[in-house]
Length: 251
Image (cartoon, rainbow, N blue to C red; front, side, top):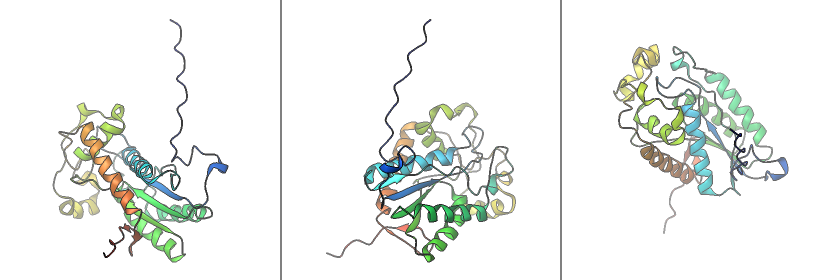
């Protein structure tokens, strides 16, 4: 059998920073930096789940805002994931190293970008983001961060993330291995999570129930989350550096 012809290269999306040459990079752009993790997501989801989701939300938000004004940098695939360190495959920088990396990244980007916004899909990164963005704001950089929020949603490797990955990367999802984890609300789990990590409450690393997940639901979750990020890009950072929508104009 003759080998099949190679597929023609696809055009890079207009919002991609990595795909541009330097003369194609416009000074004064807003740069979205997806922040994810490399950590366990139960026996059925890949280690890069948070990174894939952060990159997808940032890309969709940029597409809604307009490629002339917003570009998306390569995703940060390592974060603060110490609560998952009992599971093989997890790679964690810790809060201090993460914060330092974010600070240096913004200092570099700010030489040509108007503003930098971190689009975060891993809750464990929040402390590092708050610390880094607070320092950067004190240095007069134009910077903020925004979480990827999914409502309704569960905590980790449950229906929410399984649906998102069925939409974004279906070949990496192993539904035949999916199991129900601890489904208690996250505030109820936090004392045990802080003292013993995720494995203390869920031996298989799932906080939620993947049952009922679907690609259609994942698409809907992604669209809503990206719409919220796009809307918040017009906001100003609060005292924790998180972008808040600007108040509506008084008629």
